[in-house]
Image (cartoon, helix red, strand yellow):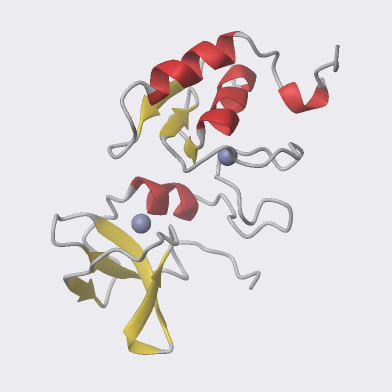
Length: 158
Ligand SMILES: [Zn+2]
Ligand SMILES: [Zn+2]
């Protein structure tokens, strides 16, 4: 599967009982659909809308649909904050969003979010609603110890 996830491919809206709105598309028939964020386990969906409204509120779906290709050959299983040239794997689920100065955001695990934060001048980090307490602080602290584009400066073993 190397299809690209965009607002165009995910024009349905899958709404959870708690009101979270995912961008979704049917996978085969109306009883099966996938969300842009590829949440697993699949969220409980109360309502499936046929069109692109209401607005997506799921942060992961928003990040994915903003044009960050989650199916990039080298980043397929990694969080959106992982730089394509950064070969390291995620350290866990996406727990924070890194926003650049133009408020373009990418969700990331603590590891990649810290690297992205250290690389983007003027960027900020916010924890996602389901994130454990302190995630954003840990990312912020870790970023302070990192050079920009840390993956281009491999840490010496000694
Ligand atoms: Zn979602
Ligand atoms: Zn990651």
